[in-house]
Length: 326
Image 1: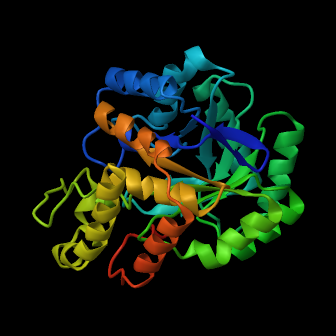
Image 2: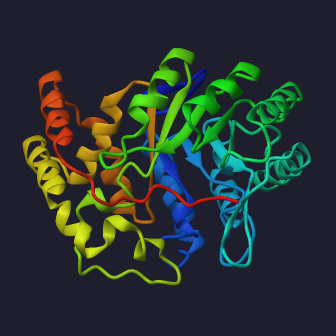
């Protein structure tokens, strides 16, 4: 697999998001099986793995970091691990942002211990904290980099103005925002800032939470207690019907390229800018192989222009844009 640069950080063209192994996509999976899956990902050339402090595992706080640490222990120095700070949830499952310097330092010490490393490769602010100026967060990041506790820092779900302000204090390596054929608002706002300031863009949910794989219909059922797709707008029957034209377009190119819809969707993300690295999540070995093979799918300039032109005429009527924080 080829590599790409997120600022000065070199990673594989695609990365693996590990959240769904424990959280938000149904019941937590068997951890031994997930460790094997992560090992398979390394074998396939993936060197970029994404987790977060807030991702729990079967009621165990921060358990996803522990899983990632165990799985990647044999590959220390060969892979890059990204984790995140600044987000917690209360008993009502509301997301609470907290990026006070003392909270960041406490979170960092916990993540370093759980991951079993002395320095975190990429440390994201999970959500911008409306109570703390981004410049103050950037100052803390500069201190942590100077102390050798983090190598790079990034921002997740940040807008262009916030990125600029933070970068002016301490250079931002990567922005992790939602991006797919169904969620393209960053193209006009965040992309130009990334290009100008040499900041990488890590595209999460590049398959729109699985919708673009074409694996689901309006009759698909998701567990309301464990799977947040049960309330995501793109999976509601009326929106599923409305977006069939999008899936038909993706299928057209899939047939042309002898690829799957998921591979076309990921290849499209890769083709938009060289500073973009999509991270997909999966708990199944066959999907891991399928999604990783998307790096072998390419478009000519004419094909990409044709696909983008067709996409520009498709109205997206419902897609998840992220949970609000307090």
